[in-house]
Amino acid sequence: MIGDVPPTNPNESSTWQSLRDAIRLTWPNRHGRSSDVATLIGCSGGADSVALVRLLAEQWAEESRAISGSDEARPIPTAPLVVAHCNHGLRGEESDADEAFVHALCDQLQLPLVVHRVREQARSAATIQASDEQTLRQIRREFFVRTAKLHGCRYVAVAHSADDQAETMLHHFIRGTGPLGLAGIAESSDLNADIVLRRPLLQVRRESLRAGLREIGQPWREDASNQLTHYTRNWIRRDVLPLVESRYPNVVEAIHRAGTLQRETNEMVRRMADQWLERYSELDDNRWTVHTERLSRSTNSDFSTAQSTNSVHWATERPIIVAASQLAWDRLGWPRGSMTMDHWQRLSMLIHADSQSISPTADSSAGQADDAANHGGHLPGGISLCVQADRLVLRSE
Ligand SMILES: Nc1ncnc2c1ncn2[C@@H]1O[C@H](COP(=O)(O)OP(=O)(O)OP(=O)(O)O)[C@@H](O)[C@H]1O
Image (cartoon, rainbow, N blue to C red; front, side, top):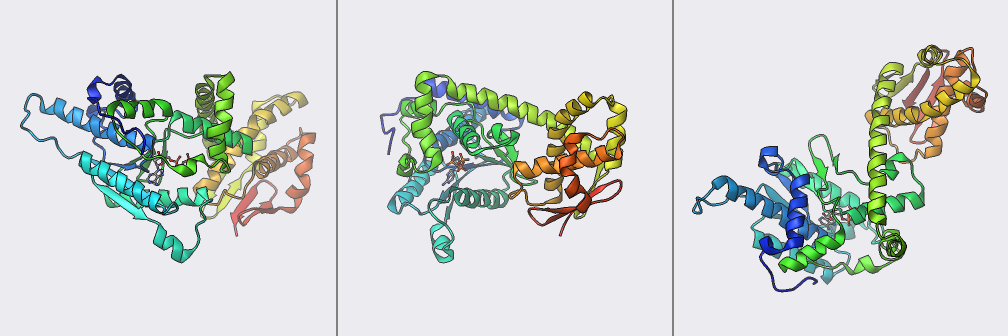
């Protein structure tokens, strides 16, 4: 266990106080109607999520005291906070000690705790491998959604920090990614129609969280598997970022800023894609119909017929068609997993080529997609594609 030092008063601790100020910005006070929305907090026992639990609990208590004024006798109302801990059982006694630690923390703060022990189920189903980070994340997600529903929580709060953001973006970048991956982790996203996942510490450096916890004498658990650099994320965290930081001390902030700008651009493209879907296509049941003839008319009225202008148009149109296609996939519930960036690009080129072949200003770059256009074809995830005179129809088989 780390950070086991004599406690100081949280109000006298300057780093801790600055963390409390920081969380007030992302988790507005009760008048902003955020802190009294029932929230499930994912706590692994690690420093980041222990800090999150304490910060949200303290914010609640502070606001409650402010509301009750000088009436000391009035009890602080129960915080609308529930803590969730997932014991994956992959590190034997260590995992159980993490669970016991979170239990003790919740007892100390008088917060309800829900624990999910994966071990038994996983052993009988024999489906989970220790190395499969994606599977573990999915298990946690499902547990969070189930528990949030059961306890009437609208928010699920997790403790990703600015360092997690930089590591994730670098990981995406190295592995190969599109605009969504380059935007990194969002401060809030929908877990389902009713539950929002929030990351109120995304602007905060991991080291400040640890320093704050040390100041108030709040211990945390250290996960020994974080040291194993065969996991790419750990390698980025332990080896790559510190090396870059030794020459560029502000690299985490710089990556963070790039992600924020990319998210703004993505939001703009998403809005344009939404309009594009509305204007040129229809979604019904299991089918996406793109009216290439409508698209061709608009291209010719909006833009000059000069060849050079046409290719400029295509360069700006392509990201919008890609984003519109991805939106269409999401709205129809089609699986995006096996669609690579290459598939999206080729689909957008086909849509463009088809609208251009209708127009009198056919662009030679579109020719590459002509064969597919004339014959239709298939896309991953069981999506078939059929080209008709004035439209392109995609449907799930
Ligand atoms: N075992 C767990 N039980 C409850 N909450 C957890 C657990 N593990 C992680 N969390 C929550 O998720 C946050 C992010 O942790 P971690 O980075 O390990 O998760 P992740 O979901 O794998 O995300 P990513 O790998 O994309 O960063 C933690 O700060 C904590 O709030």
